[in-house]
Image (cartoon, rainbow, N blue to C red; front, side, top):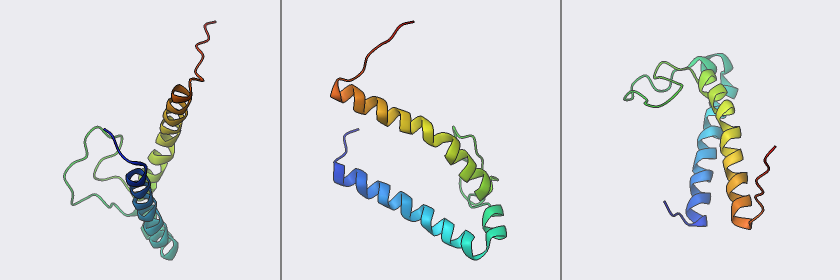
Length: 90
């Protein structure tokens, strides 16, 4: 998939806007916000550690577990593109 820098940045901005909206809801009513089940009325999720009964708190914890893997992928690809990868065998 090829995507322009502008499109990537727009998708990132939209993603963070959603996160900020959820945080604003939780700020106004933390107990209800964290225990809400936002995906109850949607089709079942597939290939996910979460399901439609997952609460916002569980979703946020899963996101935090998932983030380092993508960060590592970005660093790996950046190093690969700059020619800075070195294979070290012990």
